[in-house]
Image (cartoon, rainbow, N blue to C red):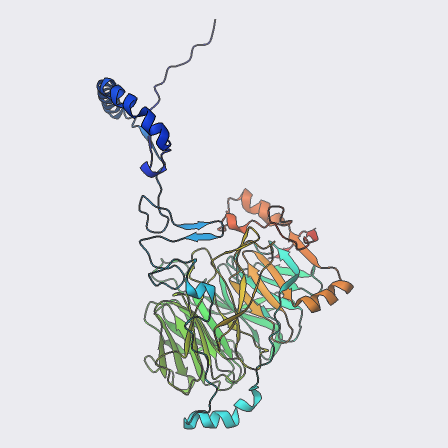
Amino acid sequence: MAPQTRRTTFPNVVIERDTDSEPSSSDEEEEEDYKEVEEEEEEEGKVVDNKNEERMEESLEAKKKGKTPITISLKKVCKVCKKVGHEAGFKGATYIDCPMKPCFLCKMPGHTTMACPHRVATEHGVIPAPRRNTRNPLEYVFERQFRPSVLRIKPAFVIPDKVTCAVIRYHSRRITCLEFHPTNNNLLLSGDKKGQVGVWDFGKVHEKMVYGNIHSCIVNNMRFNPTNDDSVYAASSDGTISCTDLETGISLSLMNLNPDGWQGPSSWRMLYGMDINSEKSLVLVADNFGFLYLVDTRSNNKIGEAILIHKKGSKVVGLHCNPVQPELLLSCGNDHFARIWDLRRMEAGSSLYDLAHKRVVNSAYFSPLSGSKILTTSQDNRLRIWDSIFGDLDSPSREIVHSHDFNRHLTPFKAEWDPKDPSESLAVIGRYISENYNGAALHPIDFIDISTGQLVAEVMDPNITTITPVNKLHPRDDVLASGSSRSLFIWRPKEKSELVEQKVERKIVICDRAEKKRSRKYGNKSDDSDDDKFTSKGKKLKSNKPEWKLTRCSGKVKR
């Protein structure tokens, strides 16, 4: 006897189509069939009315039975404004503009992102730095005392534009910060979203270690102890400052802003901006409520009370002490301001200057040699430069339009100076908008001359298809370290990298950790998107560049 199956009534499926996307017949076919359609319409009209009535009755019966019809929409929906009838956003390497919004790059109406003049030439609308002497007395003194170390003739820029070594999937979460060792030229430290700190000797490639017991949340900043090269300070979103010995891996907590644990988002304090003042032996760190804290590096204890330096309740994401005048402190935050402070009289509302921005300020830095210039990165796709801290600070000397307006699921983009450039005019920053390179959508790293706004170079590798928001230039060598998702890459100039490759073959290490299996077992899913997947051999990419030679290793996490 054949098995009996239960008869179930499936709900009706209603497909909504966009009228513009419906396939249309040619003009000749329309003329030929026009008369026939008119005759058939009268006969079919009655049948259609009856069918519509039947459908209405069926849908009412289905609603009564709790079976509502399934609706599948094939209409065009804009990803930007969420309205129906048009599409916008990225399609491969091409960005389609929303007609309801201004240009995605410069935020101005009247043109598309692809035709934006700032996309064609970054120096569009930028006023170059004047080459003339000033009569300002403060600047005159500065020229006499500090400027002699800065060359007046701009030297040729040396651009690291070739990947010589890398560690793929080094961290278990996206990389948030990088720091080079002050004396060991081949040692690179990296922090990630999970709170881990990685130590990598990129000279030997395979020598690396990840410390997973230092913090329990995002490592936002790291600085080396100026008196002890083997210890590093780190500020984390778990509300603690740590001092870690790189030789032993032992970590000491200097300050904990959440001693009672999690009491809700309204009271949880996270540490973001951090810097070290070596002359005063202080670690300066700021939180997500606008307060500044001071820690003495000699006693490793917090001193004084917290000082409100930005709008209450706003994050202070950046701190930087002037390299020439250590009493000057530069801070930036989510209240759309970068502020200059005098550490000798720190109190709420006592800032020397308030540098206004239109949106959140991701970073603010003094120039590395003279300390007389200021470079800021803002979420309005602008890099702002002030040529002199002794001049007029009401408005920046120039604004450079650059694509970095994206923060969700990404580490914020930050433009950083080249510490080796004697002219203090070269900066590096990753780019958000992808470009079409031989059919591949790549996100290059930009080197910009901030004195003219010109794009000096854009470096990319066809095997790196993810966005690279974290970039750090070496303070002594012609080396660029970049963090893209969970991977680390080391760039060198092509001429030097070819010499290195003659002695040592270029090595790319892929980490296969047992921790990945462990995280799946306990249900810890990564926050990284599909973008995180690394294309090791680039089979889908059309490029003349040689493929990387990959080796695998099992990375260890020290707990």
